[in-house]
Image 1 (cartoon, protein in one colour):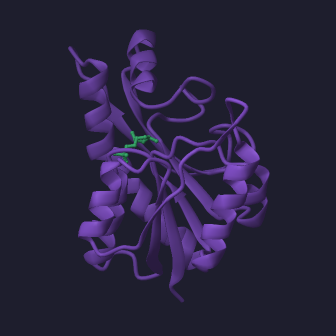
Image 2 (tube, rainbow, N blue to C red):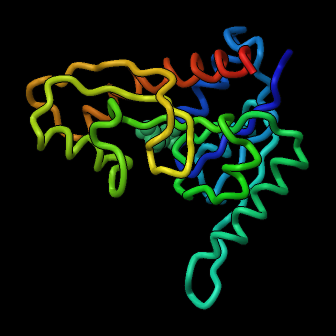
Image 3 (cartoon, rainbow, N blue to C red):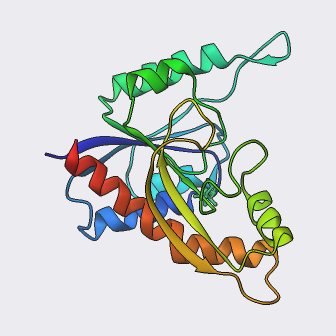
Length: 200
Ligand code: GRF
């Protein structure tokens, strides 16, 4: 049975593109890419979705008295996911921390791709290029990517897939990030999504 999937994005969407390409190539028989939700209206990920004919939706952060309205965002996201009959949620570079409403309603059905071998270089402050900066500063010889279940703990949910990538002499954060994306993220995210959708 195909499962209706939402991919949540905020930026370039290269991981979304990996899912789109995998689905087009027939590698995701249990996945129906139903909607892409972006926290930013300018995200290039939205262009990728439109190009692929996937429904898109933008839900930007709201603020109350100058503070991010996390409860309101959570309610808005729940409404969008419900309206689209979503069964599985993928975070692909999504920069908003999910609230209890979404976490509880899609418990054990939300996955995230993180650009390190968790639990190394996970948690507060570890996102984007900063992950690779910290890994290089630590001197690791192997890095990689992780796909995990999203629960209340930042980067703390059950690990579903990991893939290692060698750090090369002379690597800078940008070169390591690119290699981790190409050789790990873009491979394990579609794979983990298919396995999750098949086994629900
Ligand atoms: C990726 O490096 C991913 O590991 C992290 O955010 C980045 C998103 O990149 N969560 P993209 O938007 O999928 O290109």
